[in-house]
Length: 352
Image (cartoon, rainbow, N blue to C red; front, side, top):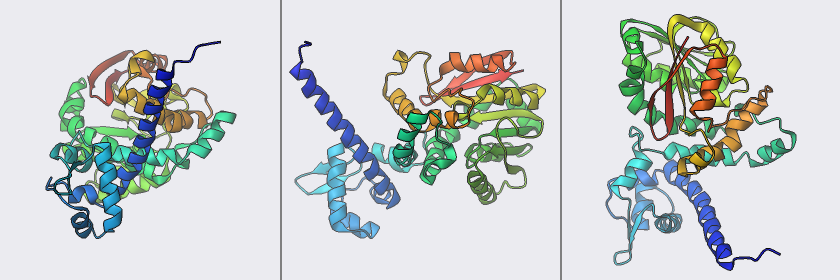
């Protein structure tokens, strides 16, 4: 009989309690974001629960408990001498400044929404048929946009487009570009604002996301050069100088088929901008905080989305450069190069 190490039990109980606390904290972060509690503390001035409640028109008793939980989680600082709580300026950037690449507030919204699908995911484990992206809570779509948009704002125009061979020059002169799996159109609109001589089309199979993208384009004042249409990645119409896929190829049931269609839709000297979640090529290299998040959301969302499309080729969110290279080469592309990267993304320049 295997001898039980009591210290290992103790250590693992502590770890499990930490994970339970993290899950509960995620829900409370969503509360703080939704009710403006973090924004009310973003000036980093110490507040009491009564002062925070007055500033946000919320219940003092609820704020008191929320602040204590936030202090226990290390999100705010507590001064026992004054009974006041402070949101450090560095934390405020992460939780309130949505133009900063360090802001991850959307991740909490997306991940708590993904967790609501647990009953459906548990059933999907039994039959292996997956769970479609469209079958999730709408906060998954909103939170995913909010999570990735800061990185797109910081890197897409300044780094990723210039890193592609000839792409910036094409867009400056005037090019046609398709954004496949565009969701709410955040990436499409960023590009349209930066390159006024070019035209852009966003495609997504999710009709509700396309409708929201159209509204966003109107609000941004770029609807004259940006259109959004409902279409799958392997059936969208048109020919383009540049095609982009932002954090979506790994969700597709037939990524090779989608890549083949993208190749057929590219001009002879075109660029495919392929942006995927950051991942190394082996499981052991991804056993880190970022990998933990991406493997987990992939279990709940990404792999399920791929399986739901019936082709059985579910890459998942930690595919890595080697697997992605195999996909694009099997689709007929001859050039595949890592052009850039961030802590959350790998960026590739793929050419016919």
